[in-house]
Length: 116
Image (cartoon, rainbow, N blue to C red; front, side, top):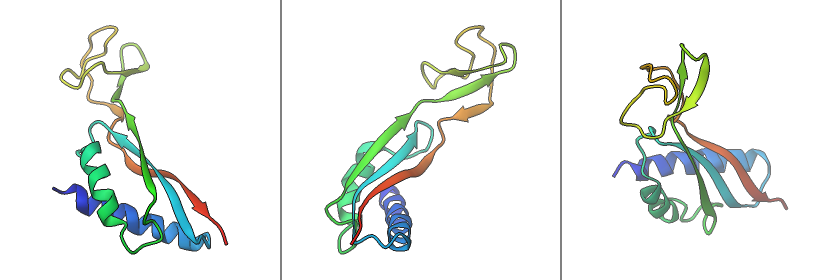
Protein backbone atom coordinates (compact mmCIF):
# COMPACT_ATOMS: atom_id res chain seq x y z
CA UNK A 1 0.00 0.00 0.00
CA UNK A 2 1.87 3.07 -1.23
CA UNK A 3 -0.83 5.37 0.17
CA UNK A 4 0.92 5.36 3.58
CA UNK A 5 4.05 6.90 2.04
CA UNK A 6 1.86 9.42 0.20
CA UNK A 7 0.16 10.33 3.48
CA UNK A 8 3.57 10.72 5.13
CA UNK A 9 4.53 13.25 2.43
CA UNK A 10 1.21 15.07 2.85
CA UNK A 11 1.75 15.25 6.62
CA UNK A 12 5.31 16.53 6.24
CA UNK A 13 4.20 19.22 3.80
CA UNK A 14 1.24 20.25 5.96
CA UNK A 15 3.35 20.37 9.13
CA UNK A 16 5.92 22.57 7.37
CA UNK A 17 3.22 24.94 6.08
CA UNK A 18 1.47 25.09 9.46
CA UNK A 19 4.76 25.73 11.27
CA UNK A 20 5.61 28.57 8.88
CA UNK A 21 2.17 30.07 9.62
CA UNK A 22 2.83 29.72 13.38
CA UNK A 23 -0.20 27.43 13.71
CA UNK A 24 -0.68 25.52 16.93
CA UNK A 25 -2.85 22.85 15.33
CA UNK A 26 -4.24 21.76 11.96
CA UNK A 27 -7.94 20.88 11.97
CA UNK A 28 -8.46 20.04 8.26
CA UNK A 29 -6.36 19.23 5.25
CA UNK A 30 -8.01 19.70 1.86
CA UNK A 31 -6.58 17.42 -0.82
CA UNK A 32 -7.19 17.52 -4.58
CA UNK A 33 -7.07 13.99 -5.96
CA UNK A 34 -7.23 13.26 -9.68
CA UNK A 35 -8.73 10.04 -10.98
CA UNK A 36 -5.42 9.21 -12.70
CA UNK A 37 -3.23 9.99 -9.65
CA UNK A 38 -2.73 6.33 -8.81
CA UNK A 39 -3.92 6.78 -5.22
CA UNK A 40 -7.09 5.33 -3.75
CA UNK A 41 -9.25 7.76 -1.76
CA UNK A 42 -10.36 5.20 0.82
CA UNK A 43 -6.78 4.02 1.41
CA UNK A 44 -5.59 7.60 1.89
CA UNK A 45 -8.39 8.18 4.42
CA UNK A 46 -7.47 4.98 6.27
CA UNK A 47 -3.75 5.81 6.40
CA UNK A 48 -4.29 9.44 7.39
CA UNK A 49 -5.10 8.79 11.05
CA UNK A 50 -1.98 6.64 11.36
CA UNK A 51 0.27 9.12 9.55
CA UNK A 52 -0.81 12.08 11.68
CA UNK A 53 -0.11 10.49 15.08
CA UNK A 54 2.10 12.64 17.33
CA UNK A 55 1.98 15.63 14.95
CA UNK A 56 0.03 18.89 15.00
CA UNK A 57 -2.31 17.19 12.51
CA UNK A 58 -3.38 14.48 14.95
CA UNK A 59 -7.18 14.50 15.18
CA UNK A 60 -7.57 16.54 12.00
CA UNK A 61 -9.68 15.44 9.06
CA UNK A 62 -8.65 14.83 5.48
CA UNK A 63 -11.17 16.27 3.03
CA UNK A 64 -10.63 14.87 -0.47
CA UNK A 65 -11.95 16.53 -3.62
CA UNK A 66 -11.96 14.00 -6.42
CA UNK A 67 -11.15 15.50 -9.81
CA UNK A 68 -12.37 13.97 -13.06
CA UNK A 69 -10.21 13.56 -16.14
CA UNK A 70 -10.35 16.43 -18.60
CA UNK A 71 -8.68 16.38 -22.01
CA UNK A 72 -8.10 19.01 -24.65
CA UNK A 73 -9.77 18.28 -27.98
CA UNK A 74 -7.79 19.82 -30.83
CA UNK A 75 -10.70 19.48 -33.23
CA UNK A 76 -13.25 21.22 -30.95
CA UNK A 77 -10.58 23.47 -29.41
CA UNK A 78 -12.17 22.84 -26.03
CA UNK A 79 -11.30 21.13 -22.75
CA UNK A 80 -13.74 18.27 -22.25
CA UNK A 81 -14.48 16.08 -19.24
CA UNK A 82 -14.29 12.36 -19.99
CA UNK A 83 -17.33 10.35 -18.92
CA UNK A 84 -15.02 7.40 -18.16
CA UNK A 85 -11.30 6.72 -18.36
CA UNK A 86 -11.57 3.78 -20.74
CA UNK A 87 -11.66 5.97 -23.85
CA UNK A 88 -9.49 9.04 -24.27
CA UNK A 89 -11.70 10.50 -26.98
CA UNK A 90 -13.61 13.73 -27.06
CA UNK A 91 -17.13 12.98 -25.80
CA UNK A 92 -18.54 15.46 -28.36
CA UNK A 93 -16.74 14.68 -31.65
CA UNK A 94 -15.05 11.33 -30.77
CA UNK A 95 -11.55 12.57 -31.71
CA UNK A 96 -8.75 10.75 -29.81
CA UNK A 97 -6.70 12.88 -27.44
CA UNK A 98 -3.83 12.24 -25.05
CA UNK A 99 -3.65 15.88 -23.97
CA UNK A 100 -4.71 15.48 -20.33
CA UNK A 101 -5.48 18.82 -18.68
CA UNK A 102 -6.84 17.52 -15.35
CA UNK A 103 -6.97 14.25 -13.49
CA UNK A 104 -3.38 13.54 -12.44
CA UNK A 105 -3.38 15.84 -9.39
CA UNK A 106 -2.45 14.78 -5.89
CA UNK A 107 -1.96 18.06 -4.07
CA UNK A 108 -2.83 19.89 -0.91
CA UNK A 109 -5.36 22.59 -1.75
CA UNK A 110 -5.47 24.27 1.66
CA UNK A 111 -5.29 23.81 5.41
CA UNK A 112 -7.54 24.92 8.25
CA UNK A 113 -5.35 25.81 11.21
CA UNK A 114 -5.65 27.13 14.75
CA UNK A 115 -3.46 30.13 15.49
CA UNK A 116 -2.19 30.87 19.00
